[in-house]
Image (cartoon, rainbow, N blue to C red; front, side, top):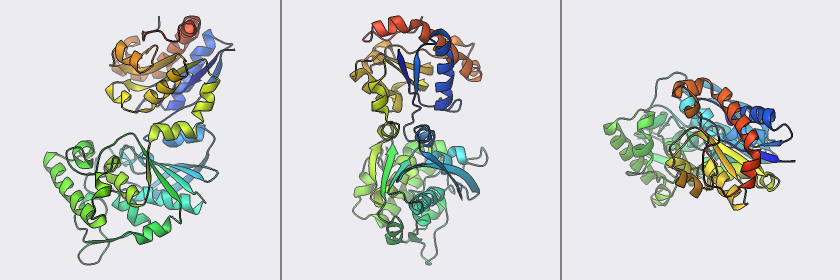
Length: 383
């Protein structure tokens, strides 16, 4: 029996990874009814990280937390044995904003700290924090405050939420936050290596998507630098890879002793991907857009690397593909069917995403003999 391992990431803003799996599986079943489908939705630390953990067998833990702009927000984290998986994007990210209005100066990471406390209270000893899609540039100040850190202004009062509050930081004591962790190990899971400050830092690279204009970006970088000088005078944490992730939340996690890890690697481990891979004959991965960023350690690239190393053919399904055949082949991808070329335009591809994915699934089912007979074939579209 042929076994197909379906391990796509989400199609951002359109379909969850689980929905992509379901649509592909539905089409494959029509033309290859005897094939066995192994479902393994993935993520890389951003949107969908908790969903991937739940799909792998973790238990959903509902929580009420402080949203990015102070409102009460319902979210979910995952727990398996003593390992917790939290997701910044759904808790305090851009997608968690109560309206379409950005809040670059007041959005806070506080709710993520509240989730960490909930995980510790539930007995978690290892806490995976998926970073990505944040709404704030507060260097994780809100997170630290939620854990009990004393971040005070010149009058001895708690600083206000967000970047605006961080501008007033005059003294800091992280000891209460470290004590609140009760020895639990933090893992910062993300796919970026930006430091906290400078041209490649949190404000410069990610500030604009949160509503900071060029002048505000420069001011924010100065604020982050001043705060970092108080929080860690050595400057070591600010220079570390990943410190700039999620508006500087990566930095606050480093101050709390977190280990930095590839989000894709962490999620694949949680999903027991390698064990599933060992029994597969063909792998299907993908995401909304296959482009140069895909090759920089994102989930589909890591899936393809592992599958290709095992000598398996790899298909990468996407809404759109901008990589060349040579780039796809170099990444271990045998074929890269896309939705846009099968639709009238991008809007049509998004609207009919599940229908088009089912169609690609039917193509995959019909093409199994040739795909399995040429595992090392050059990247090419399916017929």
